[in-house]
Amino acid sequence: VLSGVAGERRAVHDRLPHLLRGVAVEVDGGGRAGGIAAEAFDRQLARAWQEHRQRRLDAALADFRAGLGRPGEHTTDGDGTEAAPGAAAQGVPAVVAAARQHRVATLLIQQGAADAERRVWVGPEPEHVAVQRGEVRTMGADAAQSAPAADALLRCAAATGAEALLVPAGAAGPAGGVGAVLRWQP
Image (cartoon, rainbow, N blue to C red; front, top):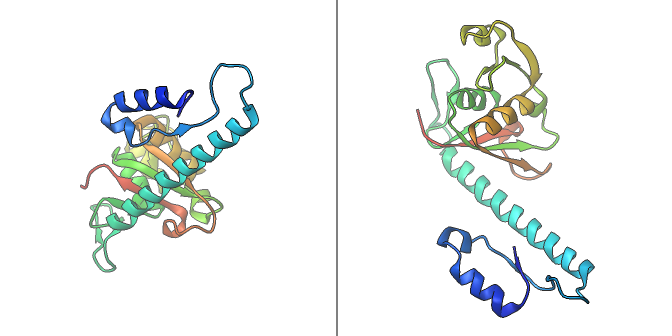
């Protein structure tokens, strides 16, 4: 967010690296001078932040839908987990498998979705996550604990530098409420 005198904001904006120029937002009303309308500035800042979050969510959901491909194109991996033909995974088993392999670029969790609360098994390391308890033990973990899928997947996302986005309830998100845009395909 760039704020302050309009001419100076533009000069700073023009000198930003190319990748930042596309996401930089100019907001009127900020600065250090007396008489700044703090409430108006705060409203503009909140609106800019909301618009940015919505654009990012819309782009991630578009990437997710494109990565799923068309019906009937899905394959099954070596563990029997249904996988999409492209760069997306949907449902707890597919997203857990991708998270375990550090393939999640963007994790999508839908508010209030049943799959977000589905129990999975975790071990001491973030990649120790599985749908079946025995799978965690085969990963070398001595003990496995039950956890909500959303919590376990958020832990994996944080540990691997993946983005995590909350899809509002009622929005057209992943079936069941858990999905991911993948970094690479197996």
